Image 1 (cartoon, rainbow, N blue to C red):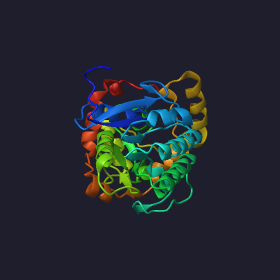
Image 2 (image 1 turned 180 degrees about the vertical axis):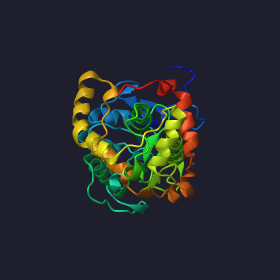
Image 3 (image 1 turned 120 degrees about the vertical axis):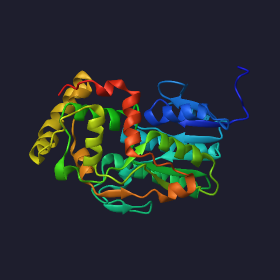
Image 4 (image 1 turned 90 degrees about the vertical axis):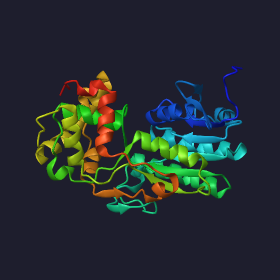
Length: 322
């Protein structure tokens, strides 16, 4: 056993450690004097199939805390949460931090706090996250210690979903100023702020059973954010996208582009899905006052989020194929 391993640090099992959030969390915990991360995923680090009860039981042995960053298809997310909580009943860690999503609120509008009930329609992904939360709450009801975090759209260097994808769409001038279709509230969670909230939740007292919204900004529209991001990328002149063009993208071109993306594995055919277009219109303001008060949630301004993403990844500045 290497002499460099410090077993006085609390061991934190990070499930989904090869993903965007998981990998950033592992990096942060590696530099911590308090925690020692155990990176677990299907592809690297500690090889764990989170849907396999035996492997999960083994992975939980002697760990102090668990952070569930697992993503994937809806069924896999629910099943892995079931397996985690069942294994934790036999070998309980001090605390489980479960990452959920703002998708649990569905089509809710206005200021949304953690007690907001889902508003239809709720996406399949959102319903899976609701089901996962229900499993975690049952674990708490049975005597376990767990905390649920609900990040908004996680933006930052390396985010394929909310940084690389939007940058490609802006550089190809498929989006820009969306007019009334982009007047919804832009709720972005900067990756560093999300990681800070997770680390704070690992050891915060008296929060078992609590749920916290995690977002960095709800003070701008999607139009304002997309225009600022486009300028930082040099994706100018910024197009005004007509409502008719956006309808064509979502109704007609999205299915074609998704099929093409699966066939040739390239973001050049990234689809503007109906759910993404609906988000750009949704006037939902995620309230994070509980996380600010209890977890000391930082709130990185949008301009700094954009600058960090562009400085980190020079490929965002490359011309995009339409």
